[in-house]
Image 1 (cartoon, rainbow, N blue to C red):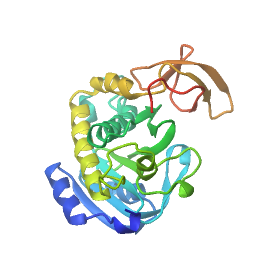
Image 2 (cartoon, rainbow, N blue to C red):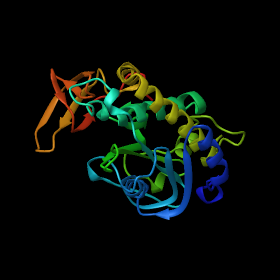
Image 3 (cartoon, rainbow, N blue to C red):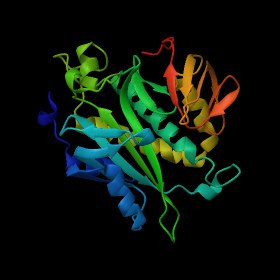
Length: 280
């Protein structure tokens, strides 16, 4: 099944979203779902808004990398949350916000593994990978929206039907994995899930994960460590100023920072210098 034969069903997604406390809107095309949701957050939109686009022209990933999506081949989605940060532990009410992208990544991995048999892992902090190739990316932005609490715009993009020739270097898609016999397949050896069913499952599990995180944020760390393929590996940490650090990634600390050679990093590119044992 190609992307053109697999449009998102807005009616089905709206019903699934309502059951999960979400308001799902499907648009044919946009520049960036994150930008759209951020604009509505600044206008006072309530938590629970979800915008999914059939085509995204100018999305952004971590470190301002471009994330573009041709029509119908992937999922490009943004969700608005407004967590009650005052109830969270830490030096400031927003101390736990850095965990949100990692909670989202943990939820996506859980859905892909449990529902679709895709052996996904997380490369720190939140790249969803299979066999070392990137399947999905996540970007979370804090949006001030006075006089109320700030909004969290949670965006993710996942490659579904994208052909190998259309993927950037180092990336994969569910279709490519299916061609290699990886994941839940139908009788013809193709994807067992439509984009609509896949997004419905992802949103249902993500809503549940965000609610659990707000209730008990400390539990996010052990759950994340279970699915982080970076831990235990020899890595190269590439810092924005040009400095590089090589060593073993030993932990993710309570602030979500990667610990390498006893030093904690919060913003950096990390290169795995050898494959993760057991991570596919």
